[in-house]
Image 1 (cartoon, one colour):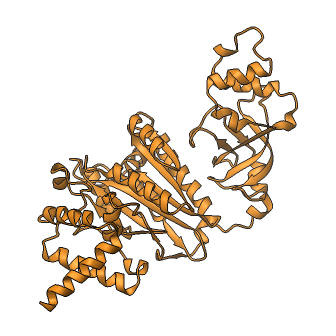
Image 2 (spheres, rainbow, N blue to C red; image 1 turned 135 degrees about the horizontal axis):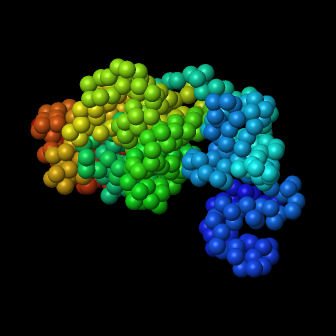
Image 3 (cartoon, helix red, strand yellow; image 1 turned 180 degrees about the horizontal axis):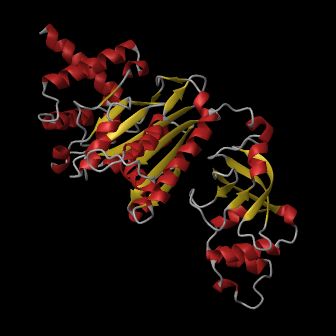
Length: 429
């Protein structure tokens, strides 16, 4: 049975090979066709329409019909049309992964058409109807830590585990100036999660990013990467951000744990500010108050669900860019998360990485991740950092000192145990 979605993933050389095996290139002109035309010819060459299947991530339109997107949530000629009657019959929602029988375009049609629904998010269609709505899920505090530590030499994830731990369902901001290493930290978080928590599905959403950064992220991340580069329209940038959130919500409804990493919430808000119709009101920096609501809804979707499933969102937030709008965006999002990781420009300029501002980085209710002994060890470490001057003004030497101490110990547990032991010895003296 031919899967149209798998066919779309092939490059032109592979499609030409398939066409030649089906004897569709008799006059030798097949290789000169556009890719979408090559796919269409191969599909039409499959005489038995019963053998055509396709899948994709559903995007619903305002009129109730939708399309199964193939190319990283972006609209394209290979999308599959889903009728309004099918979306109503099966209770389909934006972000659903739908698999079913399709037919080739005919007459003046532009898209493949979905004929029968076989699976919705890997579930039977009748079973998928019974899933709860995301808004009806009960949010609770994160109580299961995502362990990022992978080895003694990866100091970035070790520092995060100690000073700003991430739990399943966390809503976190990485607050950073330009060139402080925020994108690298996102990659380290993704790598640590993939190694220690294979049950977590990793999604990376890049908004307004450079094309080469997108390629690097796709090659580095063991997960799904959805990207809209800076040269695309702001409408497409915000649509991709919104669709990626819907995809994450559908997975959470199914009881799965999802980690969504966004770079950055600042650029997404800027895109939303330009994409939405103006309300006639303007805040300082030129941002419309209405434009803040959709990004806040995006960020606020992160939650730990009471009876299974979680959506963890870690987003970069830019500061010190010289833009008043960026400062307003940060002020609006400050305090909405339950975890903040601050990066310090002075540390980055000294080439001290990770450039984490220890004094300002923290996680709310982090005691839920630890037993009593570890909690006391973390409190002791925090007190020591405070005594050494661990703030954003005097904390550069503290961060460098702690990095050296971490290098001396193979694990964080060993580091905390020896720290408590040294403190006890000093007291006895």
